[in-house]
Length: 178
Image (cartoon, rainbow, N blue to C red; front, side):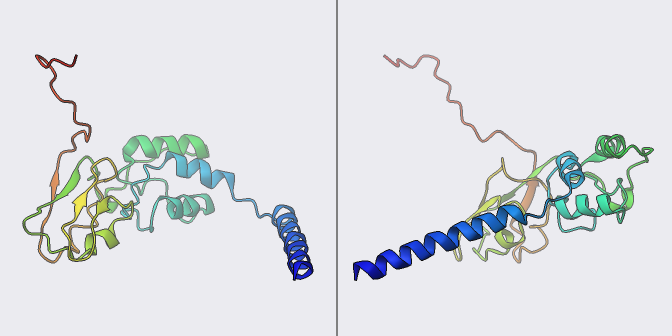
């Protein structure tokens, strides 16, 4: 019995070492330009650029498939930063892809929410907390204002508001803390 365990342990260790070596030896390096482009993008994952998120858009720019001016949340400053990185002439933000709509967050009207979780499924950044048949809430600090949750809500209980800080700082004037 002990011999069997020892044999399988040695075999597992040997196979693990072989897999580790091959992972290092045959590692496929990503395109560092994609990483640089992605770091400039606002990471809202809103899809306004006609790509599924910021990373696919960065890959398309690096391949020359997409223009640098398709990101409304990044604004003209984002276009200018991409132009500088890629050493190309800057162009105006293409408003055919929309305007920057991300200077807000959403909230859920708790009285109307039916707990369908469609908003949770639609959110690209996991800014919702909730479960099936339970009221859903928004984590404001995570919400990017992409509005992808609004059209999927069957009871129209998701609304737009200006962001506020999620940190509560109580007024302690006149409170004896000693």
